[in-house]
Image (cartoon, rainbow, N blue to C red):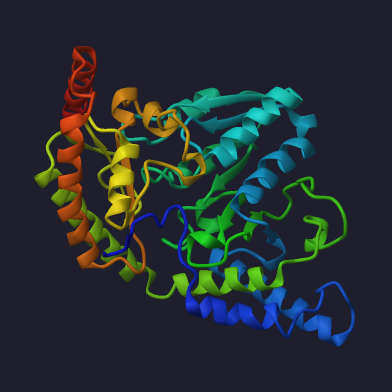
Length: 405
C-alpha cells in the first residue's frame, strides 16, 4: 500500500542533514553551555552560532533571538510576558477569532485569571482579518495586538505589515505567530515591522520541542520561566543544545531554493484542488484563492463527516487532517471555519491537505484516485444529506460564496 503524507502543517519529518548536525551534541559534545571550562564552551559556541544564523535569516540582531521549548512556549512567552511587564500601561489586548489555540487560550487565560480585556476581531468569508476592525478595536489602554502571519488551517496570509504599521502609529506592541510561515517563505522582521515573532523548528524539517522568539530591542517582557540566567536572563533552564543546533540548521536549509520549492508545492496543490473539484461534486474551497500558503488546501465536502473521510483515507495510506492537529479529537467544528461564516454542518465536513518537500506528483494522483471513491461510499451512508434544514443552509452558504467570488 502506498503511503502519502499530506499533513505538513501539523509537523514535518526531520531532515537527515539536520539530524547529522545535531548528533555531536547528543553524543560527544554533551557539555552544559553555562559551564566555564573549554569542553562546555563548545556547546556554548554551538548555541551562539545557531542564534547568529537565525538572527541573520530573520534580519534581526543576535540579542533579539531567544530560544524556547517550541512554538507554543514562544507564543505564551510573547503574550504573557509582554502583558505582565506592561500592565501599568493598560490591560487591553486585541487578537483575531482565527488564531491558533496557542494564542487564543493564552488570551482567555489572561481574561479569566488576570482581569485583562481581550477583543477578538472578525475575519471575512475568505478568512482574512479585517484591518478596519482592528483599528476600531484599539483603545487608549490597548497594549498588545497579536495576529498570526498565516492561518494553520486555511493557509490564508494575513495583512501583518498593515496591522504592524497601525500598531506602531498608536504606540502598541505587535506580535505575530509566524509558525506556519517560517521555512515556507522569507520572514524579515524589519520589513514586517513586528515587535515579537514566534517560530517553531518542527514546521520546517527540524526537531520537535524547540522554537524561537524574536523580541525587538527595547521591548519590555517578563520571563515566562524563572531560574538561572540562560538566554540573556530571558528564559531559564539549560539550553537544548542539539535542538537549537537543529532549528538553526533546518531554518537555513529551508531557505535554500525556497522560492522554487514554493512554486513546486503550489503547482501540486493546484493540481490537487482542480482534480478534487472536477471529480467530486458539492465541494467548497475554503480560504483566499491567492493570498494563502502555496502548500495548503482546505476544503469542505458536503454531506460527509470529515473524520470519516480521514479514517477512510488512513486505511488507504493517506495522512491528512480536518483542521489543527492540536484540536484533533474535538467534537466541535473548526473555530476558523465557523469564524469565516461556514455553517456547522459544512464545517464538520472539512479536510486540510498540506504539502511539503517530499510530496510528489504520484502522491497527488493517488489521492485523486482514492478520495472520490471514499466520498462516494460515505455519501451513500451519510445522514448529512437527509435533513431539509441542513440542505437549505448549505445551499444558502454556497450561494453567498459564489456571489463573493
